[in-house]
Image (tube, rainbow, N blue to C red):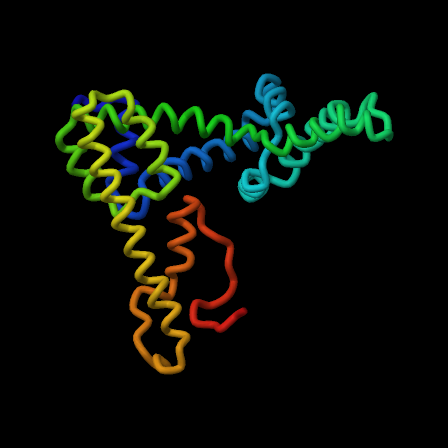
Length: 239
């Protein structure tokens, strides 16, 4: 399959064979988006209109705060907070009927929307479709795909959804590879978590932890596609 502007980044993401390739792809897009928003795009009217309309989820607020200057984040927040005030509270009365009709739904809408989430979802849908097309047409990429360590559970779902565009024969063949990569790793971390639990038995004191010390973090990453924020050491008996 001839490489182009769409396929080259996907090859680059799959080449390292480190973790879930779709997680790396998502992380790359998030990093670029967070940098873009807090950089030159910060003062672009059309971008500001959309960031004011959609806001950011907790995870992406953290990312833009890490990447941008405090001033750039403050400028984004200034107009966002102003729009939220008008959208949620302007014209609302403190009585229960007004709260139930206007304030509560407006807050719930805000809690479910995020500028970066929406853009990442659109881009990931396109990239998943490109991955499936590459697998269908490129034998070298099929081999590279099969050599991935695993596909996390959320991206297993999105890839399986994307294979629905293929013929039944091709979809079945690709689904088998996706199942294998995802389930094999699930069973691996399941075994490591079981071993981790057994190491807290006094009879195994001083025993070999094997690959189990980071099994909790790896399992959560597999289930959620996100690294957990933890501070406790793996062998601490925290309760």
